[in-house]
Image 1 (cartoon, rainbow, N blue to C red):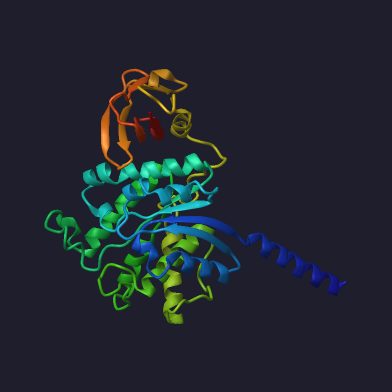
Image 2: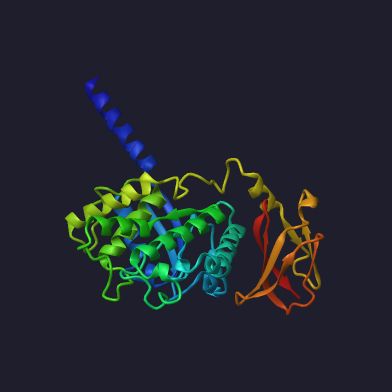
Length: 350
C-alpha cells in the first residue's frame, strides 16, 4: 500500500511538472540592443534550463526604429509567417527618451501600426514592448537640445514613461529591462552592465535582460535557474533576483495579466476598434468608414501614413467617407483616434 502511494505521488508530481512546462513562439523586432549577445538565444537557454521551450525568429537591423520595421519587408513577412504567441517590439535606443510631444508624433504612431499589423495576422498574439535602458552617462549627442536626458537617470525616466505609453496605448505588455538595470545599478554600481561604448549591453547586461524576459514570457520565477551564460554564478544569481523582484513587485505597472487579446471580456474601446471597417480595399478614390454606431464617426481624428512612414494627410472625420483620390498608388495606413477609438487600418490605393 505504501509503495503504491509513493508511486502515485511521484506520478502526480511528474504530471503537474509536465503541465507547467511551456512552449512559447516569439518574434523579436528590434535592433542591436536585441542582437548583441544574441538576447533571444539567452532567453531560450534560460527556458531550456527550466524545461521550457522558446521558439523564436528575429529581425534586428542596427539602429532600427518602429518606423523602420513598419516599412521593412522582412519584418512584415515574419509577422505574417505564422501565428505567434508573442511579438516583442524594441524601439531605437534614444528615440523614446525624446520630448513627449516628439515621441507622440514620431514614435507612438508606428508602435500602433506595428501592433495593428500583428493583430491583423492573429488577434490572439500578445505584443510586448521591450523597455531598454538609459546610456551610462546620458545621451550626450542630444543633451544640448533636451536637458532631461543629459544624465542616465533622466534618460531612464523618459524611456520608462514612453514605453509605458506604448504599452498602455496598445493594450500590450511591458518587459521592464531598463528598470531592472536601474535597480542593479542602484544596488551595485561596480557591476558594469555596459560595453565600452556605454550604450550596448555587456554579457551581464544582456543576461539581466534575458532574466526579465523569461519572467514575462513564461510567468515563472527565474531565481535559481542553472543557466549562467558566461556570467559568474554568484553574479548571475543576484541578477536573477533583481529581475524577479522588478517584474513581480510591479506586475500591474507592466500590464502583466491586464489584457487578454484572445478571449475574456473586451472593453468598449476594444470592441469599437475591432468593429471599425474601411472599404473598399483596394480603393480608387473614396474609403467608407463603417462603425456599428455611425454617429461616432463624426469627430474622429485621422492620419494617413505612407509606406515610407511619412504623414500624407490628416484631419477630422465629418462624414463616414474619406477621400484618398489625391494619393499615389501604393500601401498606406490610416490611423483613427477619438475618446472611444484608437485603431490603425492598412489599405491599398489603386
